[in-house]
Length: 149
View 1: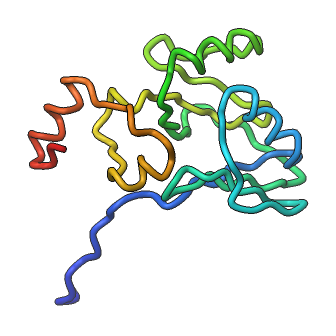
View 2 (view 1 turned 90 degrees about the vertical axis):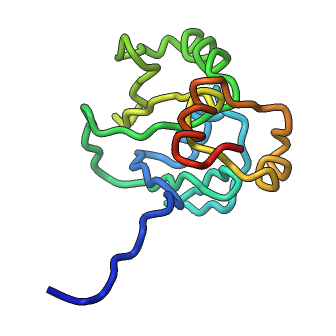
């Protein structure tokens, strides 16, 4: 066994999703998310999330995700729910706001106020999100780990 220490996981830089068409994917996600692009080509697009991003990659063959998913943090979960309802998107979890995009990627929508995940004040300010706050449960989870804001 090596005497070397281990690197510590500190976060996720990006999530990559496979889609059939970049422009269709941007139009789909643009129906319920306000975002800007870091970059775009015919086969890739990068949705900016402040200090993180979602990479959309056009592939010729799509495989459907069942339980594999990622949690997308938003400032207004209820507003996303309203848009998904208008889009006739089925919510597939009674416990969470999970749905499938047209390419079979399972997405879970999570409100920023309700989770430990936190952006720095500088990143929030840069994203124009100076009015978001954590609820008491999320604040306690952070405090329990010595990470209270």
